[in-house]
Length: 161
Ligand SMILES: [Cu+2]
Image (tube, rainbow, N blue to C red; front, side, top):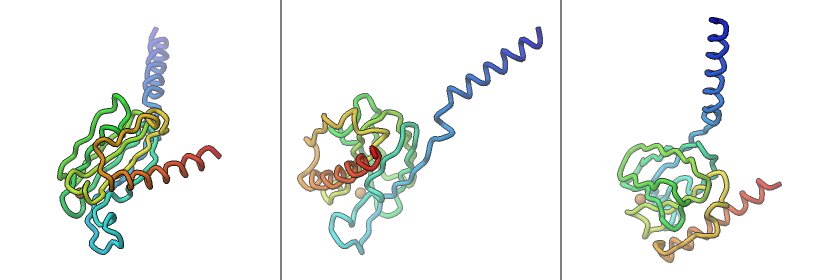
């Protein structure tokens, strides 16, 4: 009887381990928000650093705010359906875990007009790559996203090899 209990207990803890399967492999990334007056182009003065990342579901990003006052704000038209929106305002440090695959667009509410945008791919761009909308993105923002999507396409090609 007690042996059976032990076996059942082992089986239970094993299944708990399996359920938590993805977390031991989850990675944590860092994106800083900076004002860099030595930047060579105006768009690089106010920026997310890096402004592009490809991560996997379950991974997290620690958003830092090392110089200036910034926000990390999700862009509605570049966001997977059902994924929780992000709105971090003027915080030195904030962690966000990304569970749903897809493309995540970010802007800084303070410096969006200076081109402070970022793109994060979680697992695959597929879920929302065909439903991207730029309704709330400025002309400069669209130009920046064009560059960010080019990085994503290069990454995609590299990953399919
Ligand atoms: Cu900013």
